[in-house]
Length: 313
Image (cartoon, rainbow, N blue to C red):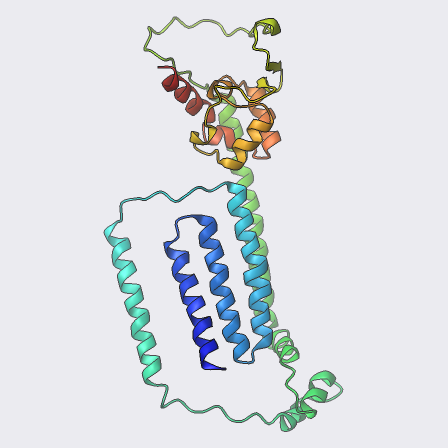
């Protein structure tokens, strides 16, 4: 491989890996990993490992990183918050790189004493593959060509077939386990939401009233509502156009720019609207936002009630 290209791709790989650690934004960190994968793929292709290099781009830089970014956007992860660093974490962050440097120094110091790889004799190697059993491999080796893809497949599905099947079963079990755990968490959150009473926060402390029987709210008179609002049994009070007193819904934990835009599309602009949601409203917006149980898990109603009270205090 040409030396300048090696150093360029190596720098890409190292810079990308460093940015993965130090970038606090999850999307930026994931894109930095793509840069690192591309640098590694360039080095592999420069070493004539074309098949592995292309797999590095298609599988890791392509499919897996698209999955990472999709999950980050789906969960609406925000910028990482800074936390006080513990002594154990700091010690591990110092000791592990030192161990890696010591190992790397040992490998580099023994490079001169390493045996050289023997020259490939492809035509002689073709004799190891009987033509009727491995016709493609035998023919290409006889033509002095290296069938690296066929050799990898032959080795993988013959000598390592059982470990390959074990890995496939483990991945399947892990996938089923993730689905089962997420279902249990959703069911538990739904049961909690039905039994949990959402507290309301008032602007000023008042005397606790005597408990009264729960009565169904009377239907709202549309004539008393602002001109740009309407009521709906499933969605509650919604705005038909953006009001002047619209609130910043991103302040609510669990609501990002994407969710705020979706809520605005459904006519939700203020903390008061979210604080007044009923169980039917919560169920409706859970379905509309495709995040079953998220409103209850992140306790949007309590947050919205507190923000509304603070705003009007």
